[in-house]
Every structure is written in C-alpha cells, then in structure tokens.
Image 1 (tube, helix red, strand yellow):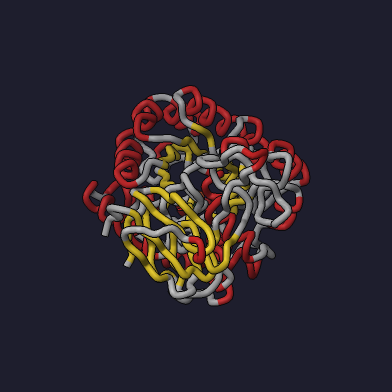
Image 2 (cartoon, helix red, strand yellow):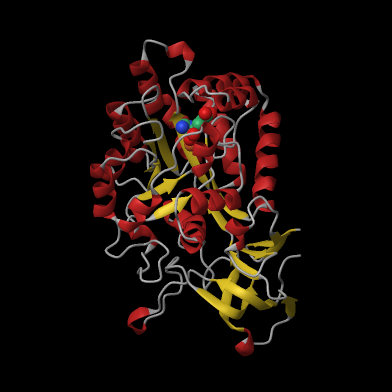
Length: 422
Ligand code: NIG
Ligand code: FE
C-alpha cells in the first residue's frame, strides 16, 4: 500500500540510521549517509517517499497510520552497487568444475555473451525482472546494473536500455572481455567500445566500467575506455584486482572513479592510493569515524565476497582497507559466472565471518557504503530527507544478518515509502 498521509513505524527494537552528523549547528538534512549509528526503542515517520522524523518511540509524533514493528530491527534498504543482471543462460557446470578444482578465468564470460546475443529482448527483460524481484525480497532497494554480455553495438545498446527500464544506476561495460570475433585484434574492439558502442550506450547509462585484468583489458585500454566514457558524461568505475594484482586500482584513483571493485589482490601502493583520496576521517562503520559527504567519498573500495565464494578465491582484506581509512562498500556482483547470488545478507555474513568486518561495518558497507559507491545522498541511511527505503528484519538487531546466515530474515521492505514486500 502506498503511504498517503503520514506513516509511523513504532516499537522498533533497533533502528540503524547511518544518520548524517548535524555538526556545527547546521542541518545535515539531505547530506547523505553518515557513520554507523543506531537508536534503540525507536520510531520513524514516513511522509510520501521520504523519512521525515526518527527518534525514540516515546517521543514519536502522531501519524495517520501506525505500524507496530514489535521490537524488530529496522535498517536502510540495501544498496547493491555492483551487479550484472542483463544476461541469458547459466553456467552451473562451470561452477561445479571450479568446486572440483578448476580455476576461474575471464574467458567464461564468452559463454554468457553467446547466450545473451541469442536471446530475445523479452527473454532478457524477463530474466532481469526475476532478479530484481529476487533482490527486493532480500531487502535490496537500490541496485546498479551493468551491460557487458552483448559486446556488439546493438547488443550492448539493448542491454543498457533494458537495464534503464528498472534502475537509474546503469553501467556501460562494453569492455567486459574481448569477444571472439575480435580475437587477435583487441585494439579494434577497444576502438569500437570507445566509439560507436559508446555513442549507442551513453544515452542510457550513468557509469562506464572496464574489467581491468589479465585476460580482459590492460591499463592503457582501460584508461582509453574510461576517458572516452568520461568525455561523454559517464562516471568511471572499474573491476580491478579480482584475479591478481594489477594497475586497475591506481587507475581508478587517477581518473577519479567512484569505485574500484573486487580489490581482492591489493599492493601497498593500491591501498595508499585509495587512502589518499578517502575523506580525512575513515568513512567505515566504526563509531569513531566521521561521516563523509557522499560526493567526497573518494574512490570507494567495493568488495564482492560472493565472487570469492563462487570462485574459491581468497577473500579481500577488508580490515586493511578500513584501517587505512578507505571507504568500503559491499555488493553482490550478481552474475551467472563468478557470483550467482543476489543476496546482500549472504554477502554481509561472508564479510563478517571471512573478511573480519564487524557486523556494524558490514551492514554499513551494504547500505551507506553502497550509496557512496553510487554517489547517492538519498539512500543508505534513515534520517529526515532520506528516501523511505527500509527493511524490517525478523530479528531484534542487525547482527542477526550474520549470526543467522542463510535464514530469510526480511520481514518487510518499504521502497520510496511504499510497502513492496511482502
Ligand atoms: O565481476 N569480473 C568480471 N565480471 C564478472 C564475472 C562475469 C562472468 O564470469 O560472467 C565479475 O566477477
Ligand atoms: Fe562484476
């Protein structure tokens, strides 16, 4: 049901706000997420698509409608800043072979490219819709969606146009891998990605991305693609350091990319480069950290533990990044090859258990961190001015997302003030 008048959600056991600091006496409204913060025995008010009040239940103003959260936890809807959702087919046999010992290689992408090219627009739209519903059921209220399985002008243009039907966060990833028909002539493919393909995709896209990795694209090619995209008004982001150390992270920082994604293999120079452009105080979830303004979050390190799970690789060193002051986001990397999960709760559980993030750091990274990675100041937090995107958990605290892994804990989801789940 859409919220018509005002809606009070009360008796919230723990409200995760990530609220911006109201420092220097000024109003922080609309400032974007701040550090991890909670209010216990809380309530909030939604009017239209916005949060208009948060505070203790005992001081909640009257409202037209009341929802009793019955001591459950409420948190911002997840912001999944990295997903590849426009594709056809699946690669479960490749996954099974990996679990039997075969390594992951970028070349597997070509199998999905073939299936995607062969699919009709209606089939791709149906797959996209299915994944979007799956995400919403698991609490994701904002998500990014990449192209990258078309790799012709027409197929990439079709992919970004389909993605734009369901999210404003569309990423042009023509430089995902060199398609088979350009074998031996990667330069000509990069020219296409920077030329006619970009022309066709830019009108539907906000972001430009490159898979900068051995077996995909090198530093010069990645720089050419990201620079060409930037010249067309797209903002760079990059796949970097997934399969081994490489130039991608430093390139991301050099070009002012919003995010460097994966960051599984990092050199000291990579960490230093990310730390150098991070806001003065750490943006991670520790209580001592100051909140970054989203646009000033530097280049976010977006960690994708689903990919390490699905490729049996070592997990990224989240502690090293957070301790260095780098802003860290968590995202699903949902795709049929390396990480066929759309579940942010699963990613949070992996990050806590295997990447040594605290439960609050992981939840912050999956909400506020994702907002920073997408340079959004309206999502990832719950405070006056924020979009009313929230999850009511079937649990008393955010810790349960890692404490009860694999258990469906999403009791209800509101997006833009509207109850969308169940
Ligand atoms: O982020 N690394 C490149 N792209 C995806 C994998 C895509 C695939 O294997 O189909 C990723 O892991
Ligand atoms: Fe990816």
